[in-house]
Amino acid sequence: MLNVKDMNLHYGASQALYNVNLNCEIGKVTCLLGRNGVGKTSTLRSITGQHPASSGQIIYNDKIINNLSADMRAKAGIASVPQGREIFPQLTVHENLMTGFSALPRKERRIEKEIYDLFPVLRDMLHRRGGDLSGGQQQQLAIARALVMKPKLLVLDEPTEGIQPSIIKDIQFVIGYLRDQGDMSILLVEQFFEFAWDLADNLTVLDRGKVVLSGLKNEMDKEEVRRAVMV
Image (cartoon, rainbow, N blue to C red):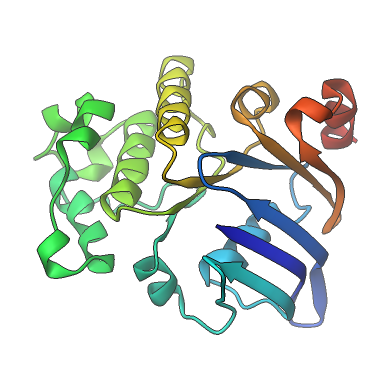
């Protein structure tokens, strides 16, 4: 579903990524790990079209998408749950969910019952403003908004950040459920190591903008990966 080849990325004269390679498969969770500031979010921004790669290829569904705008990537099925959630605080929960319609043809603009089944708290708060929700509820709203877009590639940037343990478990269940449906690729950036390890099928570790470890989880040593993330 996604194949990133030798991607470099710059912010002005400063290089953030060096020849990054990354693969995401349908029905799998790929976890991108590393300390703060090593290039994880930059990788996601380049994939979703929010910052152009300087060189290399981003191949999605067998097509090179480097020159596609962020909105065209969204319409092609790439949905992002950004770090910090970025919901609209003055809009209601229902209105926030409806913003996901922008990536869909008019005939497909509906909120599926499954979304409320996965996040029942949202059904109970449809008419509350997004800014009145707790951090955990806002995170659930951000994920639900992405799912409204019916994505083929779901990109999540640190979904457990600042979230209470009970909701972390709920989010872990949802990600695992989506993976097991077998029709979506999931790319997860996460600092909570055990959360990432439990969900991952594939792991890639970044350090200073470079891939230092990558492979199938069941072929990797957990403590080696942990050390690479913590150094």
